[in-house]
Image (cartoon, rainbow, N blue to C red; front, side, top):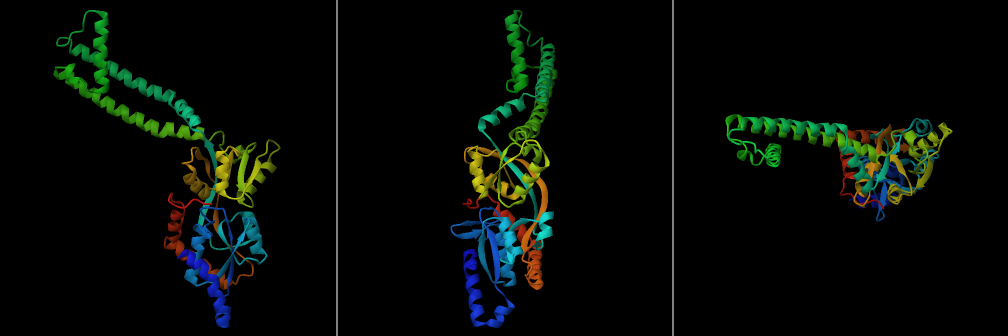
Length: 375
């Protein structure tokens, strides 16, 4: 249906213009601009436009019965300039409404908010080292040491209580073997019926069981929260803020807010500068990152989250080192000449689709793992 609607819209507008001049005047054909290579917002696959922004515009045009024709632009900056110059009536995409853009361009009602993110990659060997380093921390050693000391104390108490029924052998070697057996049973659980026969001894076994349960819960909690967090921090390298991108090769799409941020960083400090590597598409950035031809990718959080799902099975391990940098509203852009009545209709349709949950639905569909890979 999406392919059909995109194909029929221009033809329907042409028929209306020829057969019904009055209707054509009432419903002018809008010129819609799109940028390829920006999944999951807008991209072409097998000649068909797809993505969150594309689907949202398609819903708006269907709801308001707006005929339109589509044109493709090389970058967001060029598409925005085309809208300002009146070459495009509506620039469709997840366009960040930054303060400098708000001064120059006319925007629709925002349909979502998103920030920038930084993607880096680590090899499996690097992550293995990070995991081992995270394990050898004082906190983990203290937890393990506390557990072993508690079991050792229970072992001593068990030997004292069971000395009559299970006397300790006289020889040193046999004594050590007997003590280690009691320690092992209390530490692991199986075989407790072989080391105790008294009521007090059984109480010690139950206490050892509780110590094991509590210690296991503490260890699992520590490994889940602390070690996983340390590994993520290590995988992110030394990038703790956008300023840490200086001195790195950073891939960005031309004409985006991400590129403007890098230029701002380079201009604000006399120190090392970030090397800006222009990208035609986000998927191209994933390939360059895998080949270590760039050190990091900077782009919209939504785009890099989508790329993370697409690239994680390619033999390397990308991760988002930073998220939520400079969050801004995202919207479509209007030409100054677009009639106010038409812009109001589009804004009202966006508002209705947001309120009904359609925009959230489209966002979820656009970022699911099952989506086709962007070309």
